[in-house]
Amino acid sequence: DQQVKQNSPSLSVQEGRISILNCDYTNSMFDYFLWYKKYPAEGPTFLISISSIKDKNEDGRFTVFLNKSAKHLSLHIVPSQPGDSAVYFCAARAGGGADGLTFGKGTHLIIQP
Amino acid sequence: DAGITQSPRYKITETGRQVTLMCHQTWSHSYMFWYRQDLGHGLRLIYYSAAADITDKGEVPDGYVVSRSKTENFPLTLESATRSQTSVYFCASSESTWQGRQPQHFGDGTRLSIL
Image (cartoon, each protein chain N blue to C red):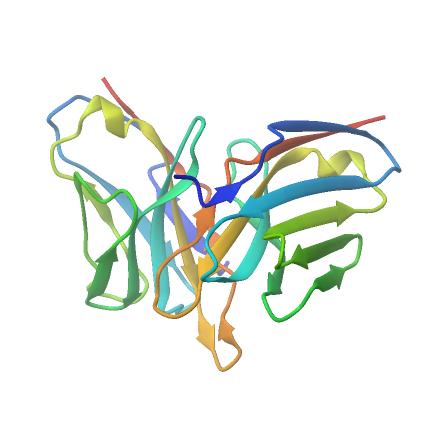
């Protein structure tokens, strides 16, 4: 059973517009959420994270929103740039212990000129 | 240059062979992880380690063995490779601070094909 879901396999956005990537989760024990960006033939690169005690975190063009009651988070990229074209993974970690991350399947973001 | 490196980047082997994937990090991070990425599955945790000589199973550990005799190295061994283990393997590391565990940082992966 998938605990982290990214229901859009791909998303196409025009350059300069806002990109919104969505992620849903089912495990109430998740307390830390991350977004990673991945280019082909490279490892995932950490983008931004949010703790479950917050509902928003901003870093430059990237903002992550967390809605705990809906078990939903989203990544906003404003403005979208050609270099943002990549696969974006949503990941979550349960509190305590040394266990790893649970990843979604990823969303391929394509920024069109 | 500091970072996390995986070797080899590409490997082709046959079923039944033993193969070891290497992971080395220069940050002295306490935690290290192995994931595999398959089409339609995202990344799935195989094994992780909280410190030298401490390892534990993740979501998909069957057919894999790990060891961590030194903080900086975390090799992953397939003792008898099967075709279902054809995948891209990623190693990651992270540190733990008073603020909680920090984001994991990933290597560039090893693409393993088992014929």
